[in-house]
View 1 (cartoon, helix red, strand yellow):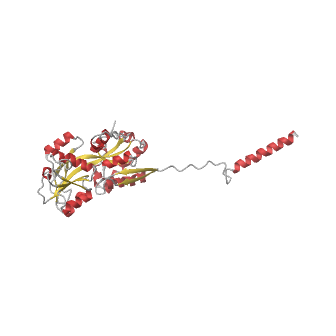
View 2 (cartoon, rainbow, N blue to C red):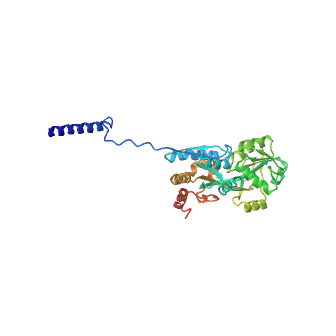
View 3 (cartoon, helix red, strand yellow):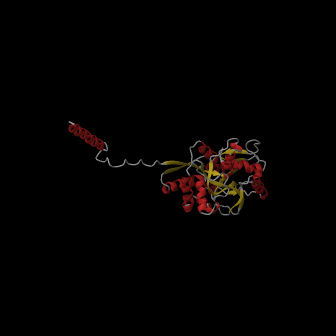
Length: 335
């Protein structure tokens, strides 16, 4: 009797074992389940208007990152410029952005248009190239100095853009103001629209901030004779002393059609920044990819020729992301 019970128990155990083995399906019970595919991380790069330099460079960066860094899907977004870019980052609608260093300084420290609203999440990746201030008039105009814009129609940039902030700062040196005093008539337009307005004679002057050469200035110069105003040495000195993120630069003669003389003006640094929660590994890979493939960016826009590894930290007005710092330490740029 005991032997019979023992045989029944053994038979049940064998049946149970076979049933469990069958649960693997198709005889594959001894195989481990396939690992879930790695999740692709979406990265949005906020740039600026399509008539400037940020947008074509941002698209080139997106393509480069997609090709060389696995596990991410990167796209570039046209925007009104730095202030909107920072707002998009604040809303977590952009992870990476182009930014003028002065506006980034205001944002991080809660000053000017960011008063009492500091954006402490901003982190630096690299300095890209100088953002050169082009103050452009028709060559047939009597305007030879910024101070002569009093009572004239002037395009300070798109409303809420970094260029508009530059216009406010530079015109302010000459006692000119298109908002409060209104001794200048402000026309808010993006770069492409500003060039069209200058060509059509609807405005007396425009300010375009960008690398050399900037497409909107080239566009204007291809249709009408233009003059790019030189800033007086004492005004350059005054601006740099008051706002040290500006520095003096020269637009070499021949940069634009019909430009027969060097132009003394100012520039700010164009930065590539990110949110502080973007992984250090990804930031390291982005930083390395940018500097290792800088020549590919030049193919997208010649302004990238001024992107130099030794200048990567120049004009940086926000803290660096450790992933970027790691790359610069490897290259001897940081200690």
